[in-house]
Figure (cartoon, rainbow, N blue to C red):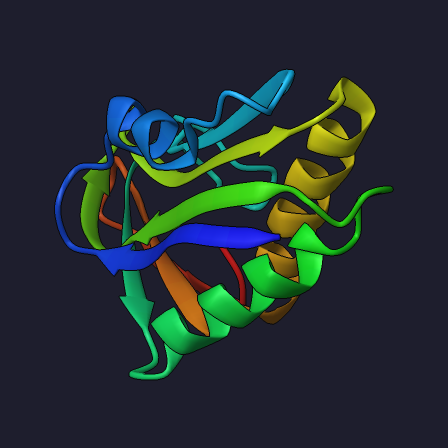
Length: 144
């Protein structure tokens, strides 16, 4: 198991950088997940125009621990992971979370990728403030 990248970033996330970080000739499968800002939310009264993410100072360490645990969740325990979460002001369409996983087989790559995003939503100390078109804002709980 390898965590090639685990970062909290205030700049745009790059899929190419995540894929390069996990490049491995022994891996027969690569999965990716990109979580983007959408223009709606079930709790919003109107159109969502932005999310503002804030992270606890320990968030990057927590993100690495999440990735390390997930890397061992696959059948072989031999997955390589690159994962980043963006902070700051993000507009609709911007990537907030990016995950790339390389593993020997597709099932393991999918299992590990899903475990990373579920653990981020559950355990990462990152909060978001949702901004609607009329200026209304609302803080959302822990997770991405």
